[in-house]
Image (cartoon, rainbow, N blue to C red):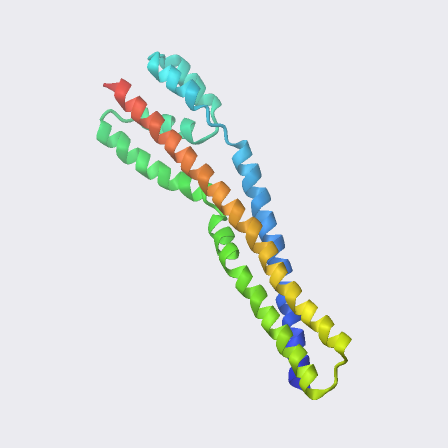
Length: 194
């Protein structure tokens, strides 16, 4: 039966797709881990320098910082009014948010869709198993093997989805923390600027 062979190959293609999606997901996780590890967030140091009203120390700390805080404080030193600083902060955080959230939408999508892709492969495999049973071409062992093969696709879909969801939540929490800390430094900067 040609349709049984076609469905069996479609199930295998689904498995290969899940393997590819897994590799893609892991590569995003590794890249994001390295990215966030490289970001320094010396909020306590900046807050202390702002409270001490130490412009030379703050300028030196800004030069040394390669992260969001240094970029923000370097940008807002040019402005005088609170309104200008707020607008600059909104624009800067919009730009930084793109860098911080890079790849997270892919992790979220993979986390929510790969179980369904695995389920599709399972359904295709079960159809093949029942097709073999109905035509009488398959022995009990071959039918059981194809059922087990079909269930492996669901497990593979879950093995791709679970780490992707965990990584998405973890990195999203890091993004919120960085933006919150930067916002608190901005508020303190504005308070001491008056």
